[in-house]
Length: 209
Ligand SMILES: [Zn+2]
Image (cartoon, rainbow, N blue to C red; front, side):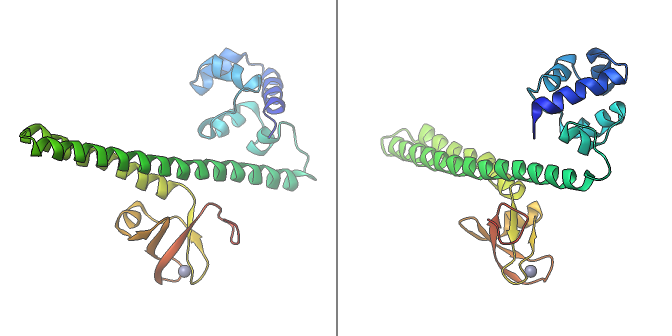
């Protein structure tokens, strides 16, 4: 996706619609600085306001992402191209999220070991109350990390059923209660109903990782 081209396109469509940056920003409920950032190719409009923006500019999302008016003949090709690029972006983000989770788990384990050993050392040396508090708070610390870790595993990528090969996103509840080995989780497939260890995958397409 060519952000500069998209920016120029937004700018020209905005002028065609007879709007200033400030007027457009006003209608979208955002700052004119955000509009200026799109038009100079520094950022892309959020997915949440893309549809509203396109309505105001009299274009469709596919045209916006391509950065030009599209004729009927090459419409399908452009749509597929844009979809692929958007998918690639999401997959890249998901991979990053899973890497962040590994770092997070490592940090938490180190913190936990450190805090509990200092805590028990304090208990053995007569400082029972502060020592116990330290051990207890290290366990409390675990809760938000555990939650964010599980949330990442829910949001990033898909799970693949080894039986029917379908890829899907399970519910948060299923993720929380499922036993796991590494990234793989024991889940019930919503397609074939078989319970098995389902592999974590980034892409929705079969045969890819
Ligand atoms: Zn299945």
